[in-house]
Length: 106
Image (tube, rainbow, N blue to C red; front, side, top):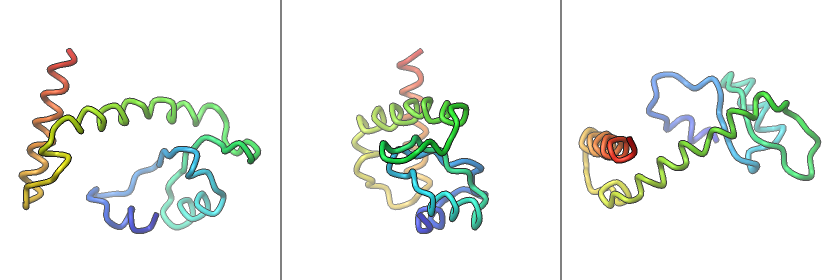
């Protein structure tokens, strides 16, 4: 997890991190909260007692929108196989793909 946060291209770290059931663990929750100040939101695994209330998990239930966007972006071969050397060019094609997706789904 530290490598993912270190490789982030954001200026500041997020306040909350939403993950699936695989991210539900007490050591990860403590590490994210104590070292980075990030709140972990993940549904409970079957073999654990409830550690989060349902209000926080509402954010997890809206995660499908992001997953759906990534699935739509896989229709663009240029984004799946990154052929651009410069990040600016790649980011431009990501913006173009998002624009085309949003115009298609109006």
